[in-house]
Image 1 (cartoon, rainbow, N blue to C red):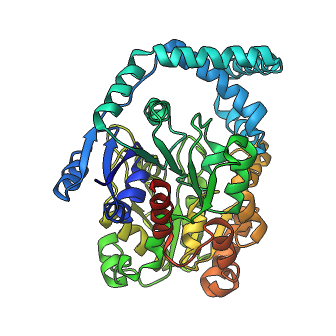
Image 2 (tube, rainbow, N blue to C red; image 1 turned 60 degrees about the horizontal axis):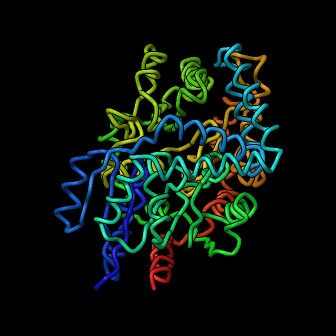
Length: 463
């Protein structure tokens, strides 16, 4: 009999990784995938069942308030004593402008007290012992134990070991002695997400920097297997069948009458930068004034966890901006089915636009796969006094390898942004000489076979 491997899905991007890459079909050659999804995505569930996969839907299991309280304490311990990454402080300082100063002060004081307490080994042992006892006594956890036993799986594969929606599930699997396999979904997850409470038998990461982060932050992982497999979701970018013809793409995007160049602006979520529409406005106004070619069009791509209404409202009077939605869930923005059509649309957008602009986004890497100029705003005309905090965002730990390549060109002002875009439209090759360096540093492999590498590691782990 084939060994049964539980595959957990708690985010939209997990679907892109485990389903759309063909990973599960390849796994079925030597094991039996058992899918557990944490929201009822009916079209996906039906699709997988028709393909012969075993699928289960389980709503997220919420632990007790007492357990959540002790986990908050452990998160403080993790940030201060294990993570020790400048990224955490950079983002906290940056986001402070959006928070109530009194609440921020209370939270900061509470955190400081806990940091001091964790300096004593006795307190640390006490908190972790309490966490273990609360976990085992939690009715939700006992229910998850029963579910895992009923599914009768031998192993677990997750791409989101840091996600709270999967926390109890993964802890239960570890406690029951299942083979634990994790492939970290994105290159920023190790330093930007919270504590990964389970020690895995196998870890897979995008690059050498991620491998070093794992070893530093989780010393218990040093003696386990850490594999650099690249980014499976980048395999699409090396398959020409995922790019529709320019004519078809223009028609589908509503740009069939466009004669000039197209600037792609990939937006970020409101939670990160509320003033971001200023950059699209600056580009649009430059086109109106003739500072950029008048036949240029801006294609705005909405972030999957942002509402496009935020942008259509801010840019209501700008008819040289065309809006493109992303995969956004109706109930929770991070819960949506990513279809092959969605991926073809993204690949085609990256391939058929001329200059790419975003604010400290993974899209810099995506766009580099298509050898497009990458420009980033490095100023804030709306909130000048906090501009220095905005600039530090680019120097978070996960993004540093990108910055060191010099392939991402920073615009220090609105005037410089317009100048750089003009240059990139006229001489794109001047901006793309280091595109391959970004890919080498972040996704490691550029052969479109990262999914095969992941499958090979899982096959070996199950032997």
